[in-house]
Image 1 (cartoon, rainbow, N blue to C red):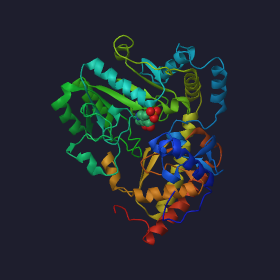
Image 2 (image 1 turned 180 degrees about the vertical axis):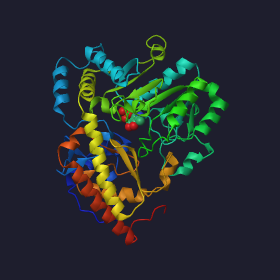
Image 3 (image 1 turned 30 degrees about the vertical axis):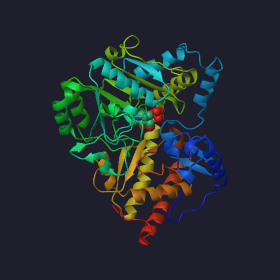
Image 4 (image 1 turned 90 degrees about the horizontal axis):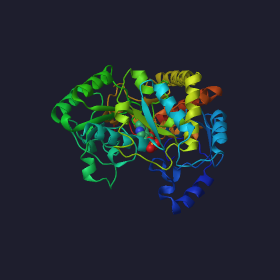
Length: 454
Ligand SMILES: Cc1ncc(COP(=O)(O)O)c(C=O)c1O
C-alpha cells in the first residue's frame, strides 16, 4: 500500500498482473467496493488457520478474517469435512433439509431468546427482511438507525453509514439522511431516521415526536464499523426500556457480534433481550450462512403475511457449515480461547503503545477490537474523526509489509479466530505492530505523516 512511511517492499508482481487483468471484467478489479484498493488490491491464494497467503506467496497473520466470519480458522477440517460429506448429497433443491432445521434450532438454543429463525445467504438479506417484518408487525414505516452503523448493502441500510467527512452527516442536532452513493430513491431514504449512538435523551425526544410512525430501531450492539465503539454503561438497557415504552421493536444486528462476543452473542454479553436479530459471519466459519429471527409472534407473520424467499436460502453448504460451526461454539471452549488470545494481543500492543507514550484506548471486545489513538473515549461515529487515524492507517499499512494483515482503515476492527492461539500469531502481530509504529512515528518526526487532526 502506498505510504510515505519507510516500510519493507513486498513482492506484488502477480497481484498487479491480476489486478490489470481483473479491471477488464470486474469493476475496480474485484467483487466488492470494500476491497477495491486500486493497485494495492490484494489477490489471495489460500488461507490456513489464522494465516493467509497472497498470490505472490507473501504470508500474513490474518487479522481481518474475512471481515469477521472465520471464527475458528481458515480451512478448519472439522467444518470442511462435515460440509463435504453433506454436500455430496446435493447442494440446492429449493426443498428443505434437516441441516436447515438443525441450524436454526442451534441459533435458538445458543441465543436462548430467539424463538424462530430463517436462513438467508447474507447479512444484508437478514437485516432487510427484519426491517420488513418490523414494518408489517407494527403497521409503521420508519426505521431508526444509528450513524456510523453498517447493516448491509440494501437501500434501507445505506443511510448515514461511514463518510470520511463528518460534515456530510449534517448538524449534530439535526442529522441528515446521507445516502451512500447514487441510486437510492429519496422515498426509501425518507423512511430511515438517523440517530446518534449512546445518546438516549435524543432518542427519547425522537420517539416522543415521531414514535407513532417508527416500526423499529436497528442497532449493532457496538459500532462494528467504527472500531467497535462501545455502548456506555446502561445505554442498551435504557434503549430497550424506551423501545418497549413506545411499542417500537428493537432489532439487534448481530452479524458481526453473534456467536463471537458470547455463545448468545452481544444480546447475552450486554444482558439484553431484543425483539429480533440478524446473524451471519461467525455462524458459518466463512461459508455464506446467515439468518434472521426473534420473537415467535413476529416471525409467525411468515409465511402467510410477509414475503421472504431465496433460491439459496438454507442451501446445504451453508446449513451444514452453520450446524457444525455452532456445535463447536456450543460444545468447546473455542470462544474462551479467542477471547484470551485477543486479550494477549491487546496486552502486547498496550505495552508497545505505552512505551511510545501515546494516548490510546481499545474499543470493542477482545475478539473484535479497535485501537483508537486518542485519550477521549469515543461514544459515537462522529468521534472517530477526532482520533489519530492517520497514525493508525500508517501502522496498518506497515503491518501488511511486515507480515500481518489488519484492514488498512482504522474503522474496521481486528478479528481474532481460534487458530491464532495455535501458533506464533500473537507475537508476530505485536512485533509487526511495534516496528510499524516506530516507522510511522519516525515519518511523523520528519514531517512526512500529518499530525493528528491535520
Ligand atoms: C453489522 C453488519 N450487518 C450487516 C452486514 C452485511 O452482511 P453481508 O456482508 O453478509 O451482506 C455486515 C457486513 O459486514 C455487518 O457488519
